[in-house]
Image (cartoon, rainbow, N blue to C red; front, side, top):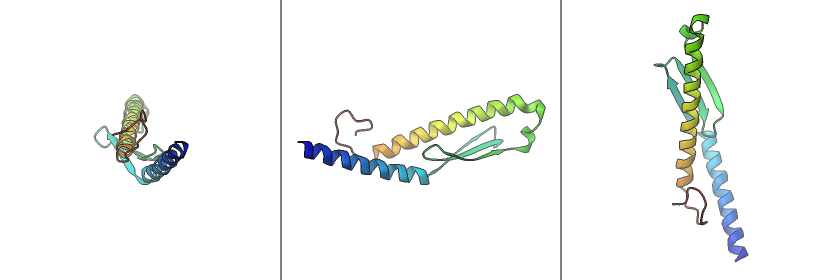
Length: 102
């Protein structure tokens, strides 16, 4: 019984490590404001780049810039979460009650 549990736990660990490696290589982008703000992140949520259109870089448009940045960051966070869940669902994990079990 314990051997099966340890075997399943080790398989789970290996699957999660594999998923994390895949997610780290993924590139996810979020674009808002008609291409005015673009954020790229890897599948683990690490921000890799932020591009801001020059037209937003003045004091009068500070509020617009802040709103677009918040929107873009929220969007990239949601996309990363969805990608992670998608990857986890690809691996059937035979442990009752474990998230993402098919």
